[in-house]
Length: 168
Image (tube, rainbow, N blue to C red):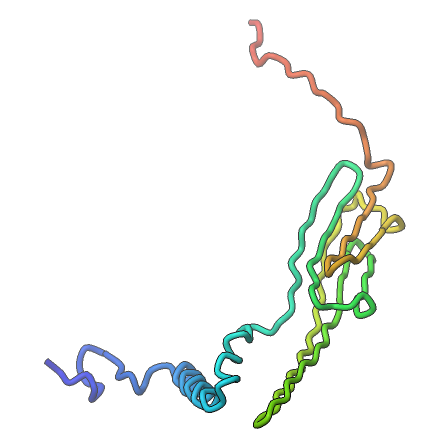
């Protein structure tokens, strides 16, 4: 049997020649954990930080006969930091989140700043009247109500179903 650590035999790649990016990340994680473990109050700090800092608000879209309702969850964002536009058949929601938190103790000081921006674009059906759009913002939830054009709102029509049998 060949010695796998020498890189010979069976095409096995020794662990030290594996993915260099994964090795780098593992080493950085280890160093960061070692650094944080030196300050007891900071030991759990990294656990609360999400891996992906990108902001992509969750959306709920509901369509009825008369309107389209879009709800976006935007926790921690101020109303003044939101922009909402409707143009060329698209609804665009964009905004920016800014937050700052600091803690000062006897032997250390922590200051966190988080900044992030987002843009979500939702294609709209041709039936939407771009002049009849309303928006409300309450407790971090943006609700956009887009009315449908009057000429596209038609009553439901019942269609008669004919028998498939033909006489010969």
